[in-house]
Length: 136
Ligand code: CMP
Image 1: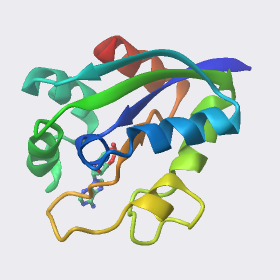
Image 2 (image 1 turned 135 degrees about the horizontal axis):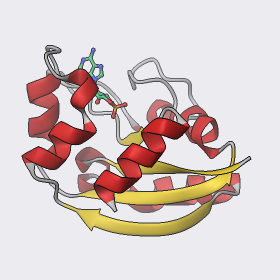
Image 3 (image 1 turned 180 degrees about the vertical axis):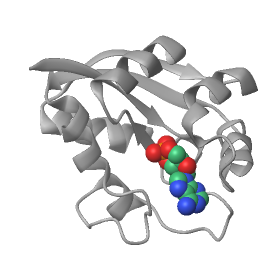
Image 4 (image 1 turned 90 degrees about the horizontal axis):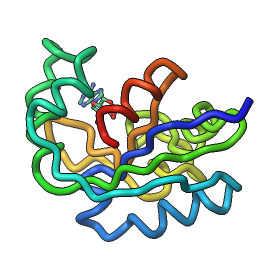
């Protein structure tokens, strides 16, 4: 069914000038861009977004990384766009993400405590609704 997801181009993607390339892949796949904004999230917005990761070893580095610069938040729509974007993005670790995916083609390990993996995509209809409300 037609649904919406939250895509973030994370600070590494914005800093590397990959926002346009990532948007082009979303559009080329046939999904619709419904809304888009540049956001410099404060800590409380990120604590909400990443609540499920609190206490994990990468949690603090993740928040620091996400506060290191602006992200581009995009509301994307289409049939099965939640699983479709996650497939386009590739798996979490960019070193081993499949070539052809955003992370597999454009990302790599930079030797940091957090995986800088260029994008975020909601993982379920529930997360999409929750996350869209946080970023828009
Ligand atoms: P994302 O899908 O946005 O949600 C959680 C983020 O934490 C993930 O992308 C990565 O940026 C980061 N992350 C997840 N697992 C690890 C890990 N094992 N080590 C470092 N960072 C991670």
